[in-house]
Image (cartoon, rainbow, N blue to C red; front, side, top):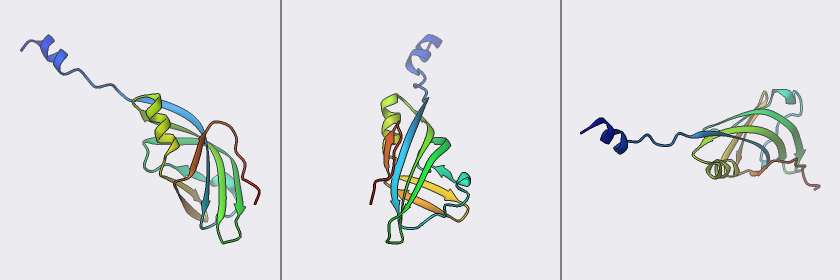
Length: 123
């Protein structure tokens, strides 16, 4: 086999690219975080190959049933083959961890929107 034949037969696969998004996450949690030291909250997307930064616009609201509505905006970078795949990963994260000094929330199937600002609804 010639080198040229080998190179044509075993072309490297397309490398993943980095896509960055600003997203708003909104969910109801069955436990509460304290509103103290909000600057120490971190957010992780454990199932995605992603990193997050610039957490802002954090809003917490009690629901009266020992739960809490939480809403925040965050920048996230995710590796994917194309922009459509990256958007699908971001819009359906399955699990989001919100870590604070007094506890951790595991947000299961949160509502995610790309771009823009979001506020908690009036209850």
